[in-house]
Length: 272
Ligand SMILES: NC(=O)c1ccc[n+]([C@@H]2O[C@H](COP(=O)([O-])OP(=O)(O)OC[C@H]3O[C@@H](n4cnc5c(N)ncnc54)[C@H](OP(=O)(O)O)[C@@H]3O)[C@@H](O)[C@H]2O)c1
Image 1 (cartoon, helix red, strand yellow):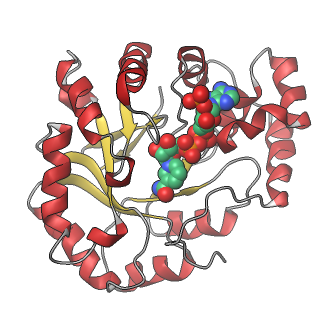
Image 2: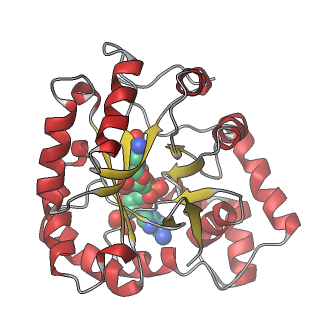
């Protein structure tokens, strides 16, 4: 496993996405992921699975300092009245005193950004989280964060082999943040892409492994593929024992020019 470092925090560069990881099957997937070596788990208030993740993490013998847990505040909870109570509820569900990373899940169109940024910082001061950040912020919103002089660590956004995010990556990195790529295997679509299939056949890997390796060979980047299937959980993690050549990297980067965005939301800002 590779790590990024922010202050005293080590961030595993590959985490398990947990959207739709629920119930008995979900708990089994989480336990299997821990056994495989996953130490980074990405959840959100919106996923309604914090309690299940809490149950599994409470049972593991892996020391807390080895784990990296991210949760995200739901857009309707971003104002003064709901932010901290909803976070306290998330921590209770997760059975944690703190999360490692707390994100604004999507920007709110009704609550002032500055109010939410103050609350994020208050959460950090209260030691409810170690690092703070945002998700689904476009260039303009990131600029507002920068102008407000808030020290965020991360911007999480959709990024995979079919979507050019070079401008957003440049801005994210220029602010000293790392980027977390969500939907990093394009919800499984990578498996049907001819270039990825060709490279995968040559390397004796799966196209999803090639797509994830392409992300891991980029600076200051974390990826959080989701799977509930044992074979895929293991394969998606097994991407640190091979590498892509500069030419292979370029061929995959060219695929991003199709600009295929998969995730829609009523909260989405205008993408630049
Ligand atoms: N911040 C945000 O707004 C935001 C938005 C979207 C996602 N996220 C986070 O990012 C995580 C990952 O994104 P995602 O769940 O949208 O998409 P993803 O990780 O790109 O893809 C997950 C889908 O692909 C399938 N899959 C997993 N591994 C595979 C493999 N090796 N080959 C083929 N198919 C495979 C999974 O099915 P099986 O489970 O059946 O394997 C699932 O349907 C989420 O779980 C969530 O934590 C955040």
